[in-house]
Structure formats: structure tokens, C-alpha cells
Image (tube, rainbow, N blue to C red; front, top):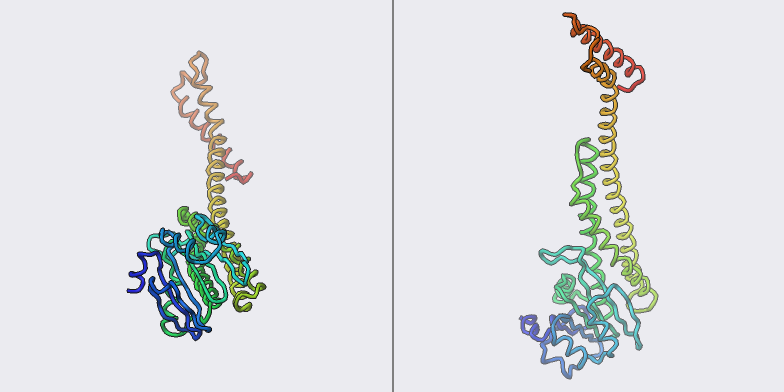
Length: 326
């Protein structure tokens, strides 16, 4: 009910964190003149594509023009920008789990955070915020703005685990069938899709890992939590690199099989050509239309030529076997 009434203004969620893991929701008309208690923090989650969001951010948020421009940029990659008074701008990417969407088409979450306020913007729905709200409703959510940002980062990182496992299983299935069936041809569409997804994930996760490493040192939130996120993304990137190498091995194995088949076919074609070349020469020589051809007037000439050709063929077969060409 709350979300529907505020979406008209571009505001998806608005909560005041009580400092104990719970929160109370706010309506749009409660934002002007809002006063926070000492232990409370404010979280505003906006739809970046809504025009009212742009208007509120520039006129009522209190953020600088520079910060607003960055938060409303069309295309961004993961980055961290430290602002005065222990504030920061944080741009993260999460797996796209919306129906019909490609998971590697990652969702951007832009965050402004200071000691008592978090302003986040998204263009498409993000499940991480829904799960975080569920925890707040149970009184088990973040207690302040730093914990809120860290838990958002945790939830967005969690979603990568499932996608990596799926990619690994798809490659493993192709590997097992390739090893077990000499005639199996890998699914090119699936293999190339796995490679494309791995490349897309790596593009955003690599700078995101560096961001978590920076947050470990800048004093915003629990350094151990940021370090754990950094380690998890390092492991994810290693697994993505392994997936890409395995895809390369599958394609290399297929290429090797096709080359072997082609070489075998060309080899057999060459042996067959050499095998029939002497017989073709004899039949061509005896087939010229001039006088004096041996056996032309004999009733047994045809059978004699057949016997000669059979003898030549048998001799060639024996020679080829001795040379291990057959």
C-alpha cells in the first residue's frame, strides 16, 4: 500500500531506521521537515527513471550539483567516490533476476550515503531491497546507514553465487557428454551464451571487487564485512575465469575432433586416389582409339585385362599394408 501511494512521486520506499534493526515507513508528504532522533537514520529508495525523482534530487535532497549529475548519469560502471564529511557515492551492479531478463544484464544501484542518510536509486526492480525490507519488518535489519549499505552489497553479491553455479553446471554437462560420446557435438548456442555471460559478469565484478577493497580502508562501516565481500568477489572472478577456460577447452576439443575427422577423410581420399591411379592409367591407355591395342582381336582380352588389374590391385594392397597406410 505504501509503495503504490508513493510511486506517483518516484519514491519506491522510504524508511526511518530505529537503530535497533527495525524501521517505520514514511509517506511522501512526511518528508518535508522530517526530524530524526539521535539513533535514527533515513533510507530513501527512488526510481531513477521517474521525472519527480530528478526534481526532488536536485531541489530538495541537499546534494551538490556534481553528486546529482553522477547519480542521474545514464551509463555508469561500479565506482566509489569519497565526499566531504564522511559521505560517499557508491555505484554497484547486481544480477538481473527480473522475468525475461538476461542475468548478465546487470542492474545498477546508485547510492549516496553519509552517517545518517542513504539515498539509493534504481531503474529496474532489485530483489536485494525487497529482502532487506523483509528483515526490517522483522526487526532484524540494519541499524544505521553503514550497515544498510553493507547489507545491500551483501545481497547483491549473494545473487552472483547462483548464476555462477548455473554457468558451471552448463559447462560441466557439455564436458561430460563430450568425454562420454565420441560423436557428440557441443551445443554452440549454449557454450557461446555461457562465455558471453561470464565476460559480462567479469566486466562489472572486477571493478566492484576493487571498490570493496577501498571501503575496507576508508572507515565507512565494518572493515571486516567489506573485506569478506572483497574475498567473495575475488573467488567469483576466479570461478568466472575457470568457466571461460573450460568453455575454451570444450570448443578446442570440438575443433580438434573436427580436424581429426577432416584429416582422416582427406587421408582416405588420398589413399584411394593413389590406389586406383595405376589401374586408371592402364584402362586409359588401353582405351585409346588407335590400332595395335594388345588383345583387341582376342576373345580373352577383356578377362586378361581384368586379371592384370586385379593383380595390380592386390600388389598395391600388400604394399600399402606394409607401409601401414591402411
